[in-house]
Image (cartoon, rainbow, N blue to C red; front, side):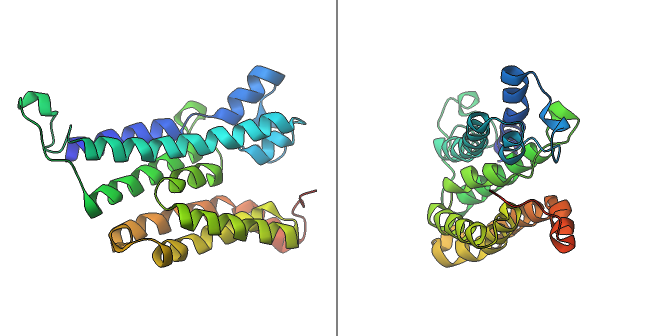
Length: 223
């Protein structure tokens, strides 16, 4: 189990750390997105470079890497390849797959690691984005109904206030409660919820500058 967990942690972090926003702007516009606007590598700041297409591509790719990280964790853990802590081929016999609560705990861990990878990418000096799109993709694989309602909440808040940051934080704050309400019991154990709460708190903390600007009345509105 230790080997399986280590593989999931490393692969999820590395997937999450792929700086798609930085790469797309660098390749197609010859710019460093970190020198624009907030200096973030996410889709919102990519849009400030003047390319809506690159911003949409960043949004989709950032979400995809989160989804792939969780999907990979679910596949590897349930395959039985590392159920005994070492590859099954070393024993010349299959090992039992991980199932139930442990399976979804590993998936939640993969989500957290992918989000951390995006926020603190090894390729850019451990500086990255805010993790919203990556979190959406990751939890679309783990808690799809909760993600749909969180996205609806995001849209409503942004429509009413025109603050993308406020919508993101509202959705992040509500998400653990939505998971607890909508997910089956095996996906809402205390350890799983703790990991999900950690993801939400990380996203909110990464918006600290936005919170300051919201309080000062200087936050940019979406147009």
